[in-house]
Length: 162
Image (cartoon, rainbow, N blue to C red; front, side):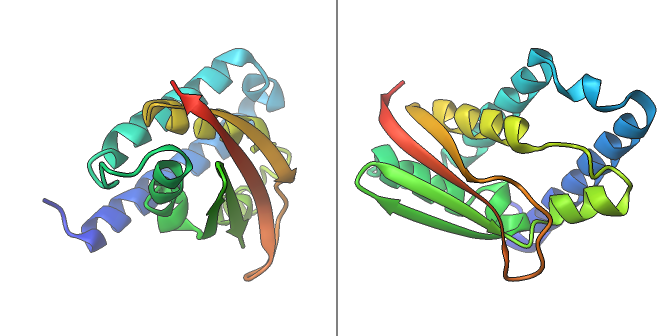
């Protein structure tokens, strides 16, 4: 089993490569490449794959919104970002503060990339991979924010088992 430090390092390395590749593709092909349904399917796949890895980390006795909240607390958002997860009455909110992705995209000249649709697809895939049906709502659109400032906020309403 990998140590937490090694795991965190791998997540950082993968995220760096991911955002760097998106920035290069944006400069080469423009935003059109990321506007189609194919890109959203990639996002759902990312969420499904992450859920597979999180299943063993989330206590089996948790279900519904408690299961989703615990998975988000252990997700890549929790590793890479200052993420706040709140759960109550079948609803989970995910707030991201000082988003590293927005910073990286701005640094590499890819401010035009709108991550909201892709992030929504990742969240839907993550929930589905945990066996949950959810309604995902964007409460605060992604924006470049300083440390301690909210970059984006998502609301996930658990509708039931998938």
